[in-house]
Amino acid sequence: MPLTYIDIFAGAGGLSEGFVKNGHIPVAHVEMKREACLTLKTRTCYYYLRENNRLDEYNQYLRNEITREDLYNRVPHEILDTVIQETMHEEGMEALFNRIDTLMTIQNISNIDVLVGGPPCQAYSLVGRARSENNMEGDARNFLYQLYADVLEHYHPRMFVFENVLGLISANNGSYLADMTERFNQAGYDLDMRVLNASNYGVLQNRRRVILIGKLHEEGVQFEYPIIPEVGEIFNRYVVNDLFSDLPPLEPGGQNNHYARNATEYLIESGIRNENDILTWHEVRPTREQDREIYRHAIRAWYQNDQRRRLRYTDLPEELCTHQNRTAFLDRFKVVAGNIHTSQTMVAHISKDGHYFIYPSLEQARSLSVREAARIQSFPDNYYFEGGRTAALLQIGNAVPPLMASAIANAVEDMLEGEKNG
Image (tube, rainbow, N blue to C red; front, side, top):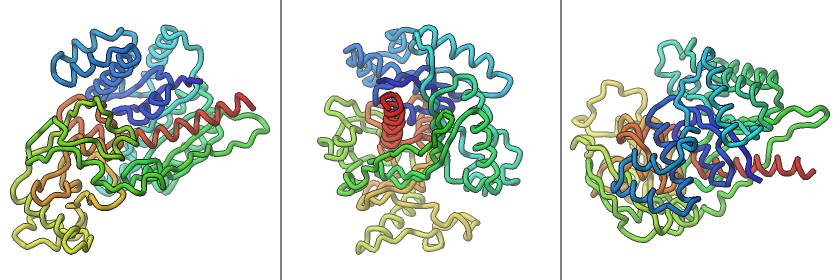
């Protein structure tokens, strides 16, 4: 039975993708960044056109045969209106609720089953706090969970899924997490927390995240965290190269949107590539020759004689060490090793430079393309990111991997269906 859900702090829609892929109904996506909202609208077009046997029109857009405006004009405006560009703040919540209530009326939906989303993570991120002068104390983003609780109190969804970084556990000595738990309890929910690794759900990435799941309190009923079956062992025969080997080689600054060969077994099994997909965003940033030489050192350190050694900045020849800081962030150059099961965690910093995500090829000596980064996050190739290259990489780095989101969505559905049939 399809569930209705609202996605707040939606980003590019990775968490939502896991729910809509399983047939659930997005009532609204709320996101503050324009480029991410356009990505959500474009993805909404994909699902609408696919359901109406008009997917060729979406593919026309990917082939640059029609404009984005043309694409949006082929989808009813009330479908696109489910994407709400809004910076959530206390004074604006009533107006936001009015907009969502209107969407519910239009869609003939009387109740919300699930609330999903996770506030921007910089305030809880260990790296973000390390780079902040005052440990991000007083940052308004620390308290966005209060707005999440406001949405819970307004719509009383049967369950919620709240995603964030590991730093949430230790932020402000754990007081934010404690306050959050108390606030969600006050809103009427029993909840529990787990640290989940995306690699256990078919994603070829070592990505650990805090997943809080809550359920409306029922007197006399003990809440138990839903069982989210792991499928990691099914995918353990694959390595990171299985994400990349069908893509054409690139020089720094280059792009090529034609597949070089057939999809790998992993790409097919994971659903990342389908036979009728059109390759987009296989585009990479330019790289200075000095950085390319550093990339080669990082690649050799890992692959030469199969030593699998990670390059430290102080290992480089002196003429390549131009940074003054020789004591911190010594792993700032890191190859995405193609011969192991998981890549390092994809992070938003990839939008600023690609040094931490070096493509594993001496000949190419470049950072990852946008599409390669998206594949590490398990986004399907037919997922199109709006905005320029920097905006696309930022959206990808901040996202919840859709394969992991799909496993969570299945677990939530199973719990609610079991309650209904129990």
